[in-house]
Image (cartoon, helix red, strand yellow):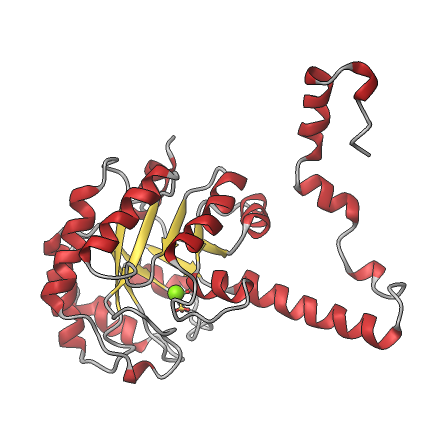
Length: 298
Ligand code: SPV
Ligand code: MG
């Protein structure tokens, strides 16, 4: 099945589905091997992994290059966190064209302004996009896509920016009318009250996606009961790798030795395995003259 169709199927399945964050080819492979069905290409995680802030400091083509590595590494569909679409309707529709060319299954754009700031930083100071202009952006993105299964998701930042539930619902209706395939309702509260309030009044038919980073202790059964379609675990691969790197660096620095670290890190053979050196070895047997086989491989 095409990756676009795989992602669309997840959004429309009867059960709650999950997208797991990845930010490079390696983390994408880990997500796939674990058994997840789809990947969230997190803007926060991709930026942080490259040492920059989640403020559109990466150019959009640098984001494209990053997700190309991810997409090549796995057979899972990727939903790109496309921030605000990197400009106006014209930039956003060009983004869709380039994503389709690279085999990415869908993109999520948020109703804020370029350059954006991460939703967990001074959210209430973040200006929202003007509703009609954002609807035009959605239309332009939907009009340009060639594969009808490519998913355009719109992210409602109203709760983040301190707007009322009524405004968030009104925008949800307007974005649906503009043709979006699904809505991501974001909240930075430590409980799910905003999501619950939204879901209780939402009469629309398109799938709803949430990112429970801050209300992490709400059981997923609650989201399923509310009618949420998709949950995004948005940043745990980045956060766990940061903790692991900090710990191991500290240990090696203090002990001036790698002896104590050896049992705490993946083996070099495990790196070779996840890189699929096995395939290269087999290919060498087919394509290299016999005397050159094993010259390049362990
Ligand atoms: C991301 O993962 O980059 C997101 C989700 O946009 S959040 O960081 O929760 O805003
Ligand atoms: Mg983001």
